[in-house]
Image (tube, rainbow, N blue to C red):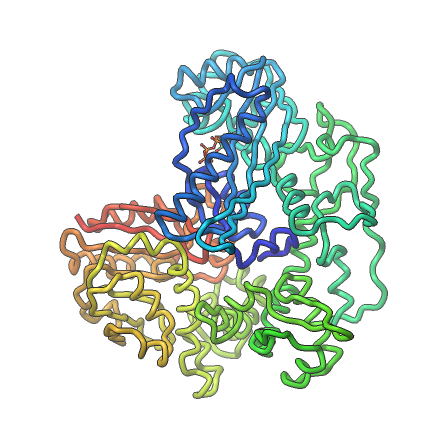
Length: 632
Ligand SMILES: Cc1cn([C@@H]2O[C@H](COP(=O)(O)OP(=O)(O)OP(=O)(O)O)[C@@H](O)[C@H]2O)c(=O)[nH]c1=O
């Protein structure tokens, strides 16, 4: 869900986070940014004495981290990202820069220095735009900034210090503490952006993106002080969409709440003991000074979220994105005629899609024309290579009606198929297979497999390809199928397994005929039938949905089939260990009955019991993460 208009400007671009920090990944994932994580190999060893101020050191380190990744991707992965984001967080106290402790003694030294004092946390951030338009040479446009937050620690007793150090938390964190977890107990106050301490100043980042993508015109008046994230081209007020096609509720609701900050500095006004956006009141050092109304962006976005999803679904169903792949763009009346639909309704749909960053609107002479954004052309046109159209239709036709009964599903813990479709099922939410019953025979063809494949194939569109490129022989892919029986696809080929996975994911006849290797689709039941022999097995979106006993049957069979050295790639959404992110995994879990979502270590542990040793875990920030294992 990308509701933030500034973040959505990055949609369709290959955005890379050059950081191994799980906190940065989480902060950016939480606001809907889609990106790949490529940790930087740059060693943080710049000579600190060369910098006049600590933030200069943090910014320069962030820059070197990001540049290293941009260059490595270009030369090693032969892939030029559009944008690389790098960051570096340091803690400074008494003129000294503290980075991550090297051992427990070092953590002790750092924490005892911080005890009973105020210190500053600086995060330097660098946004690199890689511009390869001018030919071979890639130009790097670099924008950087830093953010300072002041934090004061309580007096820490020796006992408390050591207990905290032994918790293990300090070791991968600047200054030796994590304010977002146990370390929060050591903190007396925070002045400034909380997320800046955690490792990424999100607010400043969004502002900077706003300046890059929506530079304010000279005459523009800055309207809202608190809402410092530029909100051009968005539904700035939660009423904007409400007054549209579905509701016609009359006049817009009351004005936005008064958001003047009463003279506090911006940093102070964003202080909070919680990483939540917006809705938490700014407090003074003692947490006592009065509550101020801050516009609750997160809640407002959630209130509108279902409408935004439905705009995507309706536009896809009406094939608007197919029509608007027209290079010149089309006028409202032309779109309305082709759909066909009312002009007034079409205009509202197109305008809403523009505000969501799915379409572009421009003036051509006297007329206004609409056309796809780059992202829409890539992912929303039904015939495009990485089309998500099938999956979107599945969400519209199947998931949407079922989620309308979520309260019942939660209360009863049973399938809502009967309520939604008048048909019984033993699953909480029936899986793709059942859409086929709602479609005509013609429509049925390929629809649900496309839905599954379209999300699986996005796994291939990214760097994960390199993960399994080493398995160059036969590859068996197991995906859920629209057929009653689970389906296996086997590719007998000495080709790059990634290419194999990618090509078969298209599942289109004309495309397939261009592929110079055999794709052998075997319809069978992978619980009962024999599995074909392969060097690499891919289980894409299978395990999360199976009960323990079925996982056991499948993994035992795979383990038996695999000789030492054979690979197993499991593609699923991985939860973090605290089961808090990514949101998609937890939302998906609402529709599961027998299975469960797992973290990467959970999967690793599970696969280990069947003789598979983890080789690589990839959190993609994409639809699916991947864990590659090898049979011992
Ligand atoms: C003060 C504080 C820091 N951190 C973490 O400290 C690391 C800083 O180190 P870095 O060098 O900037 O980043 P890294 O983790 O080494 O990753 P990379 O970007 O690859 O260098 C980052 O993780 C931050 O979240 C917290 O999680 N909570 C806190 O309260």
